[in-house]
Amino acid sequence: MPKIGVLALQGDFREHIEMLKKCKIDAAEIRLPEDLKDVDGLIIPGGESTVIGNLMQIHSLDKEIIKKYKMGMAIYGTCAGAILLAKYIAGSSQPRLNLLDISVKRNDYGRQIDSFESELNIDGIGKFNGIFIRAPVIKKARNGIKVLSKLGNKPVLVRQNNILASTFHPELTNDKRVHEYFIELADKTS
Ligand code: GLN
Image (cartoon, rainbow, N blue to C red; front, side, top):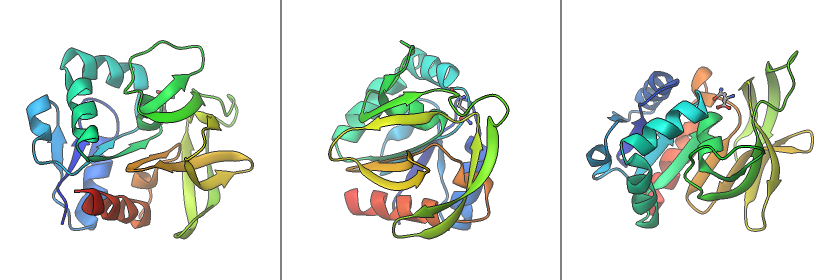
């Protein structure tokens, strides 16, 4: 089994750890650069991307994450985590990892429906209940990015090499399949 860490600075990292437990993975909480030692896969949770990004910078975790990624570590970002992975964030210069070639716009599903659930169809997984909470919209995904699921014409789960990013929250369901997909990715790239 690969070693998986969950970035535990802010946001719903506990829910990811619980989900990983259901997948028989005893995940490490990542707060400092040295916590990433031996980690094959990192989950960046949902939360507030500006807060997580600033804390990441203060603790120099951003540099270590990028270094480990280049050495083969897999990364999965959910919602705020997807924003932090993106190269382009509309109207924002907030700190980010700048690794995933997508453009995102924060909170772009509108006020009335800024939290909602919708049935998704995921490539290789099938039907999945998508929970969206003040979710960003992926406006553009560059060539070479696999769009694994869309809501209408908007990508909601994408993959670029060993990076996975979703604008929804599988950790808030009882469905392990997206996490299992990521564990397999981390296992292959480890
Ligand atoms: N709206 C949040 C942000 O922009 C993301 C919301 C979430 O992670 N559920 O950071």
